Length: 208
Image (tube, rainbow, N blue to C red; front, side, top):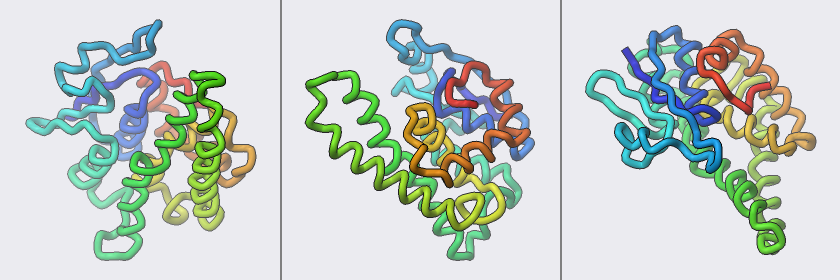
């Protein structure tokens, strides 16, 4: 059985959601952020030397990167669900979204969060950060103006992997100019599997 090493208020929530969508049995090992620093507890380093979540164990396999975890679960346990046919061009788009989430879109969101804590000292960086946010969120908004989900009418692992981008931006009050992203977040957060995953996962500030 898959074990998800789950940190509250973290990207590991989307892994629980993926497993619920697929109906794959799993168990949760819980970790709580430090209430003062908001950092993960040192116990996570026992399974991931980086001390980060998500982490999954599946027999002898331990994976620590969200995109790799989404890909692994769908390939090994999805039975063809939640991904396009690997022989099609749509599959290449799917893989691109898996990488885009953490490789491109998450960086300006995190920079905005951290630089915002610098106060006036961070002011010179804000115009560039805001430009990049508009670039990436605008790109996502355009894609979601074509279809309800990223690759068409049905949810795929690409939506699961990208979900944290939409949720994070939403909690930061950034989505008013991007109605298609807003509608997408509302749509996937209303899914029964998503709601069940939040119920099982516990504290998650990014859920509506």
